[in-house]
Image (cartoon, rainbow, N blue to C red; front, side, top):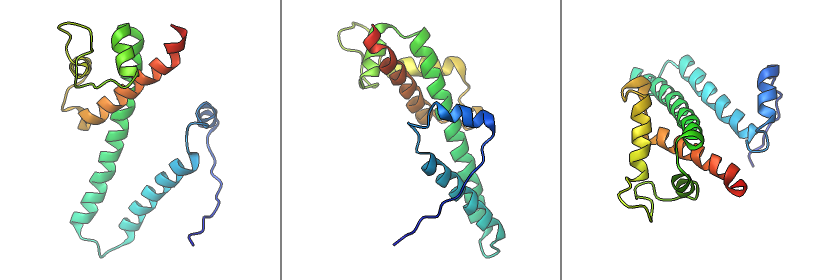
Length: 158
């Protein structure tokens, strides 16, 4: 049986205050475990001398990729929030918010481009594709999550 050990972490006041808003929706223990596991893996690699240079490079680059992916998902989410509150019309917001297929046009609207074309338009309006390991799929996933978040917050108020 795999036992778990308890540890205590200290957070700066600012981070602790920000965390309070989301602690019900976050698995704080899981987030900490993932971060610690990644950091320990990197330290283990640093001290091992039997690892070929290629494996060290893969580990280093994998970490950079994970960081870039997290950045682009967060950026997509923030942009989705902005677009949902400032740019998307009601039918588009509802369609995306209720899980509509982004590869399809919104039903009932003639000559409407697919939702994905709107996402691409907003994305290219803001970013260069080569910019900082730009990850289109991850950005788009974050954008959709941002739009869905807005829809869930406002749909019953409309």
